[in-house]
Image (tube, rainbow over all chains, first blue to last red; front, side):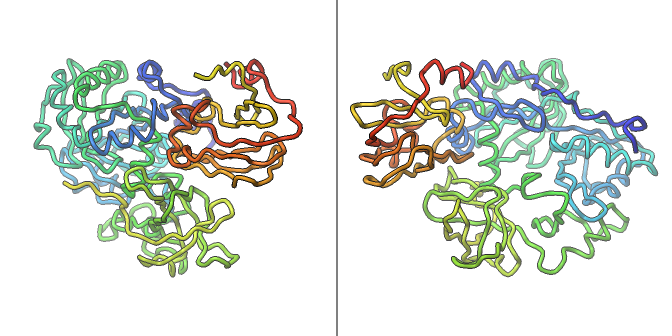
Length: 384
Length: 123
């Protein structure tokens, strides 16, 4: 398909700004490029922001994320074909984590799918994969009576994450609950609500390992919502939190990040996401045949690693089975000194014979091999 | 409070203050800000010989790793134990309590002035 024939818009070449950009500037944020967006990396201290989310609450701008509407009489059966999970069985108001697979079983993106109606779903995809996801979803829709609409520009996304998130939302008097009362809403549920006169989608989801909510609203109202949440959270320890803390929070929670743990050459089974690929569903789906075959023998698998000391292995650092072997046995995909635990943690792909819990391996930290132990994921789990 | 206009600088975002033939070295507020929260600092041994322009230590934040370059040829006469104990000093007081090493030198290379460094970082 040439670009002239394509109905898929080309990625913009200029950098993009969130509708909340001015609020971040006013709060003294440092910015980083994320998939073409200038997003806040931290406001003052990424460690303080991390700890705030673990103990009180953090406010995140995720407006760069992509939102794609799927609607039509075939929406449910279409998604069972287009995605790895069985989306047709999710009930109204529920959300499900899923994968968009390539024909060869590789991962195009990981997604959250919300059922918004009998024939309507909202898919939330990673910003960097927006155009790849829209293109794949559009192509796969050919034989179905369904519409795939890229609505990314119609939504800002604000997350409130942390043990005090519920209290903060309840104190935001401008939010009117139209569906379920928030305190009765379970995890991975969503409900329609209103912020002043503007429609608001409230989901109890997140990417931090804490309780929390993600709020979808039209960009025009995003700044007002951000300010209202900030006011409501002022006496509840709420701080704005940037992408640096989001990354250490999700790493502690053992959550994969596309481009690191998940790639177009990774099979779900290698990433420990075999349960997300539903081989019990009766219909064919893109990537089914490759998923049934599974990874080739000896293909690397994702593990958690922990070390003593303070020197953290980082993305790209190699893993060795002993101090003196020359051949690499894997590599780290994400790693940091865990702010909550105080020791280095990492996710890494290693050869299967090293994947057993408790296996001792070595991480090459800039020329020095540091011992690490294979450990179970997640590294951190909140006490409910 | 350190008068940063009186310091000398390198293109590797380090500051140097010279007292006799000893240079005290740290990283600039700009570098600390770019790194984010510093969580680990590794410094050379006291008494070790260092060559100007070579990596002699590391400054790690949660997000990335910064290298400490020796700005001069010489011998390390002191390292800041406090900053090893409390790496956050690099963020909270980069030009003061966050100093990293002292190096005794024979000749001082040409360093950047405050104006030149400010221009380098676009301020």
